[in-house]
Length: 79
Image (cartoon, rainbow, N blue to C red; front, side, top):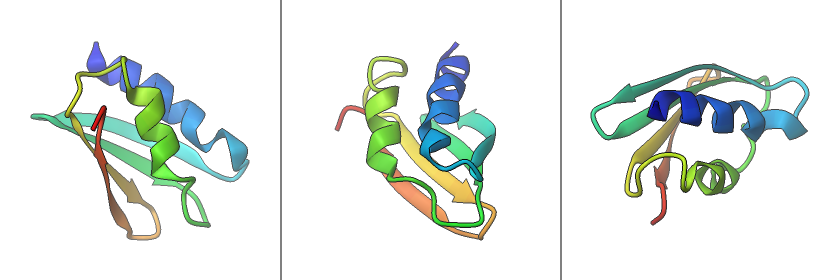
């Protein structure tokens, strides 16, 4: 259930960048891992965290992994 809600929010997150897409969303313990494909840096993670609020439990950690080899610790939902 939380993964589906996170997938919905994550798919909307890069909408402003036509060359960006989310390829996978996984939940491991209390951390949501979002994999993004983009030739440029991903959109601001604050937008993603805001959209996840109310869809997944507060304090859930969010990590964005990009195809450029970046790992972004986005923070915690609702923090």
